[in-house]
Image 1 (cartoon, one colour):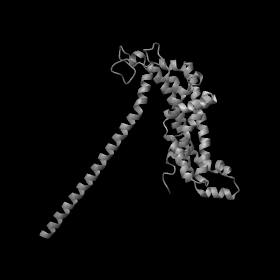
Image 2 (cartoon, one colour):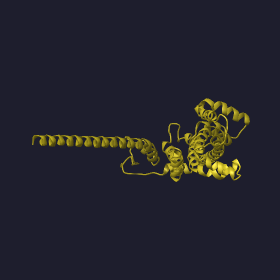
Image 3 (cartoon, one colour):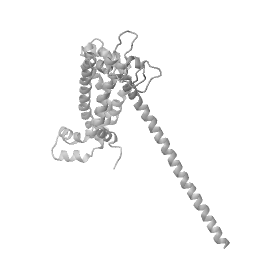
Image 4 (tube, one colour):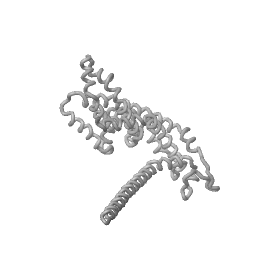
Length: 310
């Protein structure tokens, strides 16, 4: 009897230890999940709050912007009731300089993106699928071009463009290509490398030239990567300010929208049009958000392509 009791007692101890271990694992998992979602919430607020504050400020008048403490919604300074103003948006949409700058940005960013994708896809096909000596060294040289700070080459590029007497828009497009090409070539090269070599060999057997293989067979398969890199190139050209300000310093009609927004002025030298700047910032952000929402699936496919080998 004593032996049976000892066995039962030992089994009960084991079950208690197992229950404690299970509870400990579950509690650790819950704590990890809580910490993970807290981190996600902090990142979300950190990323979204600046855009929300710009949107909130764009609907406020000067007196509402001067309220202390600042309000998270547009409110009347006297009654403290919700009061939304479209005055800033009316000013922006009736500002001829802003509309011209928006058009210039569309032209410059779109042209830069198209040319970057054309040149980068051809270079990536050659580096990814053709037999070229020292391909790895060439790729690292291309990538090293992104290491130079913009300010360090600004004066030299401006001097070259001035000597060539190149207009501001083509000069900006050419310079933006210098900054977008290394990244687009690097990403597209890795994407082309992951495409099956059997497609290339089968096309050769059928008598296709290298250019036919490129644009008829391989290029359609790289659409996700083209959209991802193209969107990033577009954003780079759309938001660039330093070169745009320098190259358009003597050609106001070619100023892009970041330069136009930076040069907004108030009624007096002591009055900064913060609400109008925020309204313009919201307007120029909408095209980028729209493109991301339209191509979000393609962007994810392009970013994750080649990440999993099967």
